[in-house]
Image 1: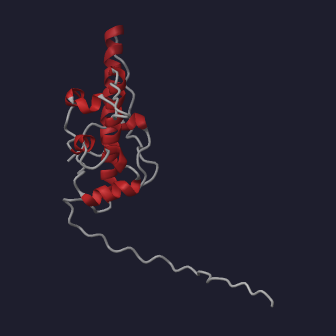
Image 2 (image 1 turned 180 degrees about the vertical axis):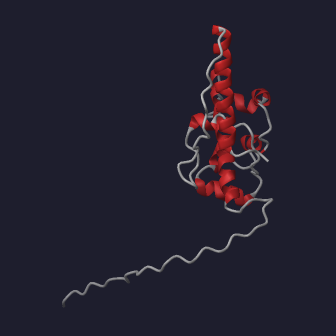
Image 3 (image 1 turned 60 degrees about the vertical axis):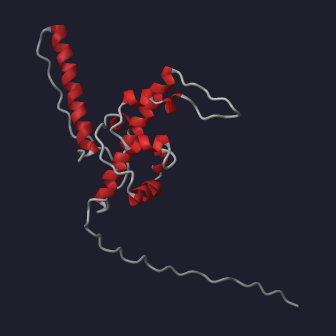
Length: 184
């Protein structure tokens, strides 16, 4: 089970601070003062997805289950399912098998060429492919964030607890159709 994204981001921020201090100590020969890194707020609300790209790029552990149809529906309702591409496509399979590495991504010819249009396919430059890799990392992190929210709701393939039904929405008074009477 992957740690929550807030914990992953916190751990990476602390690691960066440690690296900064180590470099400073090597350069100056003096002990560097370490900044205290608080646990970051990754969501603006309890059901909000993380919108901070600087935080999402730090997420590197995943356990979302893209084969779960209910999770797919949840992602679709949150507007994140499209990140994985078309169901069953090479892109989808790459997101479903999130353990695939950057080297495997670079070796896959599917990701090296654009979609064929009018009989021609554009080959991506190495810079294009690096940007695509960052997009994949951000998309994986977004799916992981979505998975966390999905699991918090008591959903998920390994969670057998049922949530109590929601109370019915209050009834609203709805005006009926109006009729215009035209004098004869």
